[in-house]
Length: 400
Image 1 (cartoon, one colour):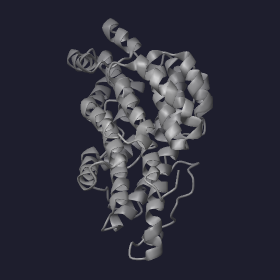
Image 2: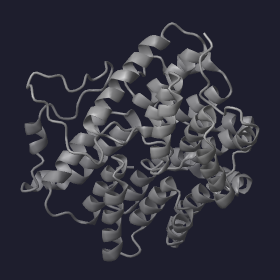
Image 3: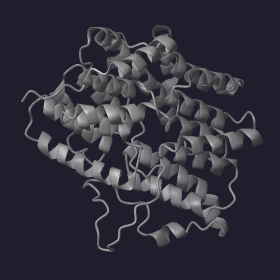
Image 4: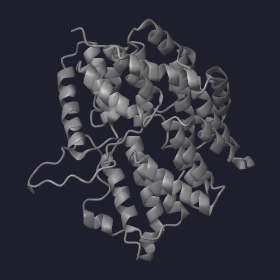
């Protein structure tokens, strides 16, 4: 996966970044928060985080592009940091990658791709698209840019253009990525069952692929299993998919939460409180099972959200909306979910928005959601039925 001598390096790294929910904690579309008091604590790093890649800003500065040796290592360094941020949920790694990129004045296509990935991870979608379009002007058939831009448009809900970009992956050695790209779009636009068949065929090849590409296929299968309530598919996927990386743990927890298996969620995620997306799911399970630890988890979430708000971040709106639902602040949850909906429209975004709209009985927002489902053909039968019936699809209040 780290073979930098071929274009496959970037294709494989790309597939490990644009999947299902980006588990990041980094500033987005805002000026950096500068404390007035030099002794002020900006944020407490949770215990259990892996050691920082760099011990100081000076260490990052050693990647000065003016030195030949470090210039040759920059691409590998940045790639590793971005993967670490995604797979381990370590916010420092994303910041370190951005620091190296910011120090690099002249960027070749490879570094521009990494810059686009970093911007996308930071939820700076428009800036990421600008960089990707710059790459495609230089290299109209660049497969990494096509796949990454398609994934970004998929997250935003621009399915038609996302599918069109998949078609650009027309070389025979890119066929697997083209099929996976198409499956990601078709799964969201009325072809869920046929997409499950396509993904099953791709999954047969997954054991021979690099870990990032295999995980990409498995996560699409997990999402399809969740929306179609396919227990057999879920069993197959979770048997082969890793249980250590943040994206894989999120998918497992979402399936278990949907089916009320709260004890297993708690067992799965205990000790993973350092990752925000996992802490949120842990708190959900603790509340639902009346665990006394729920109070501690909610307090941790509250502290982290306070930091995000202080910094003006918008990369965690889905998590914020879910947190507000957990503590019964339905109107606030709807406000945040609505703002999140303007940015991204994946399965989890639809669920949290629908829940907030149903909780508040907001006809305007329910109309928006139903129009999206009608126009795109988005398939989630259980959610559709619950919207019709006016019942809550997820994130129920605790009855403890």
